[in-house]
Length: 66
Image (cartoon, rainbow, N blue to C red):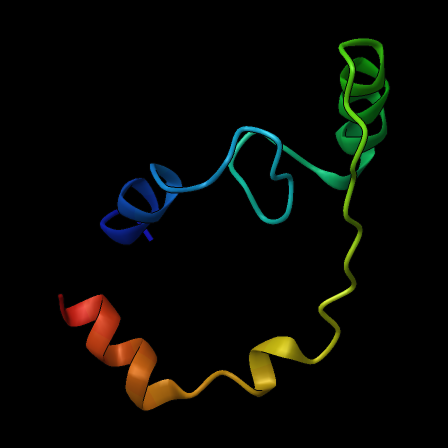
């Protein structure tokens, strides 16, 4: 985690809250309210239940190797 988190964290949008350091589900509604005040017109909510069970691990390993 110490090695790959900074690499992937650099690519995430600031508005992304899922499994991010210093961010959590309880903080997402406040960020959404702030975004609406700033003119946000689109918000996505996803429940990736069992998503990690379906990741193609061979491709994931290749990405991590790079």
